[in-house]
Length: 218
Image (tube, rainbow, N blue to C red; front, side, top):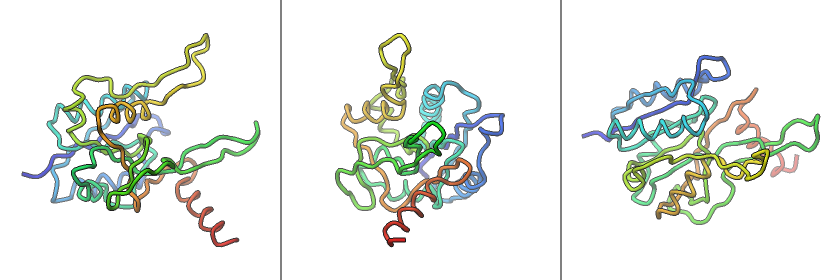
């Protein structure tokens, strides 16, 4: 039997939540892949984000999936995401592709700065590198995870214990990775494949281009 993969996209009716064109191509490519049975499930207008991410795990569990792939609507891959799963060995149960995120601003009116995440690499296993945590924008989870951690929530955003509940202590995807590591799972990223991340442009591509120019001394 073909491995069953549930593909979830966090999306919505408003334009800022629509699926970007590259991700649409990813979905078509995966649906046509003869190696896997692919089930698509849009997680539409579910708030807050931690709830939407928990819905993806429940959906994969209800469909008896072998793998869950979840995307945020503004992420995509240049490769077929199923190729990453096909490369996964027995140690890879959680894989999140690296992509650029907002790292902060230098001033009130300054443009945002971006960096690639994850940025802490522990050890390599073939084309995969173990990391402390990954972001949830392009996340792949094997069914062994929800079988060993059968009760959610798997994703939870933690806030500061003060009157303002600020700043955020832990994002929902970092919480998931920490929970999984506590249960003996390792968290991985792919050493060769990145995920794109749209703002007004693909900021992953922008960060990589800047890094190449700096390395060349331009």
